Length: 459
Image 1 (cartoon, rainbow, N blue to C red):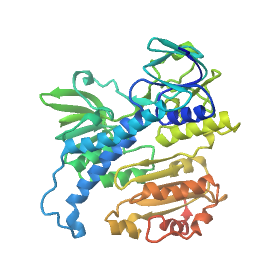
Image 2 (cartoon, helix red, strand yellow):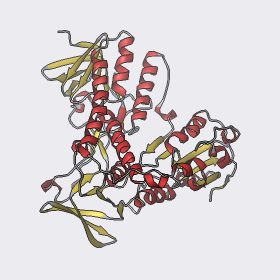
Image 3 (cartoon, rainbow, N blue to C red):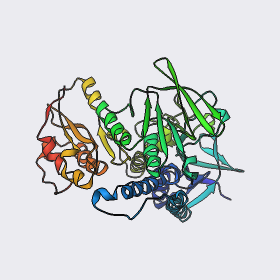
Image 4 (cartoon, helix red, strand yellow):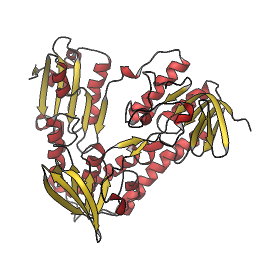
């Protein structure tokens, strides 16, 4: 069997399959290695299955509030968690199987299922084979961080991955971590009917955001009954019969919260600790992320790292952009750089948060002279009509260049409306281009020109 290839791709997360397809189409002989499930985190225990669960939770929430819209459901609402899970599994399975079928159907390629470890800068061992290639692309993703909390080793806990196996309703779900994963699962399971408490060591939720965004998110989930213990440094956990107790310290004062199940949602780490990177001379940083340059090349010629494992982005869309950068540079003679990427992401609670660019805090720290506009969703007709008037939208621009620096839309349609701003920022257009645009009524996006006409100095 010929084990020499033009390219080896380790992992089938968002970057890998598209890159394999592109290289294969260019006539290269490609080896695709996958150790577990095709499609990576997004397809199997990330975006696809969690958003399927979010959709089920939304329906349950809407059904409970049907009377608010003048609709009589004729009785109570019951959530069948086994059917919720079955729906989620079917959606996720279709996506994973589609990736597998795609990879196994590529011309000039071979799929090997197993764990890859480097044996040299241009070779990897998978099962009992050693594969060689002049180009190797590492696309191994990441996993949930399990912190060294006293007592954690003595009790069962859940992560975003094992939550995918849950087909029952926890009585009281305790979530460690008040950021994106914890917030989405928190609201979701509250809507399914569980009691939910989020324990966050920081003074507010999603600390990377501005304070008004953090407070707005807290208002949304708190309004649905999700409890948040903020400023709570976890000191230990313990099993008490069928219950789990989380002990914490707040300003030196001890406290605890007792629940039925524990979800760890305090961060992610890259899957780089068992790849034999030392055999290839590939360097990682203190957190285990593979060090790459702006073209996603490692310091070892012929080795790239794409997706979550390179620390240059933790989202499906940034991983896909990694593929685009690498493929265009290799095959089109381009000089694309990850430095051209504008930070943009969403928090998919309901209503969602759409975010792009700098926070107001970052803008103030930069010393720029800036203008900002803000409008509550209670003044956005589309949001009020849909019954979602919580949240707000805000945009901040450079007072001198008139270019948009950052924006946050927390509210109905925020995850879609934010793309008006994203595109303007990539085009490096002055904010006046959006301000003078005529948007469709009635939408959330139609308020963006109005908002940009109400700018005031950022204090």
